Length: 199
Image (cartoon, rainbow, N blue to C red; front, side, top):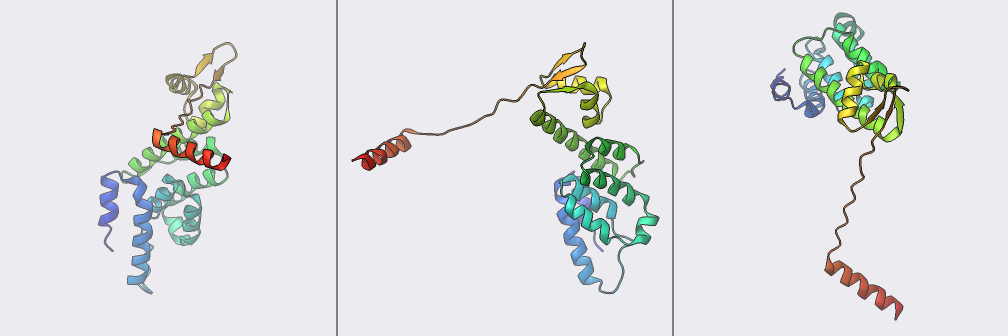
């Protein structure tokens, strides 16, 4: 089976495209190799992590269920990838970072895991930003997968305020940008329409 599209996407760090590439290659492989098992050479860990990277946990879950038990037994990296998916599926957000750090990832997969970790940290920061007005330093560190000092530094760079006495962070909400583009011709047509309705 030709994995060059996957290899190219990995080398160019086009991680957002990998899930689709893997899905297409798997369908193509299943069609071309009817009756011949190709599971032994299939990069299940990359495929799982690619779905997790694009936040498609449903597809990752269905892929996990389709992986033969023998592959799960022989490839601990596949199981480790699914542990991340399990934490996301159960919404145990703080444990995602623990699952990432709990395994010694192969050289081929390490960059994808690091990229996911960065994306996930940004996602969690946005979640905290939208859900809290104040939050404890310890809770923030859990959500961001950092130690307390690093988490505090991270959020302070984003404009949050630290109260060292209470060990609480005050969230600085980002201003909501609303752009209304109302040019004079639209205003003129609206005025004419309202005038027409009134008379």
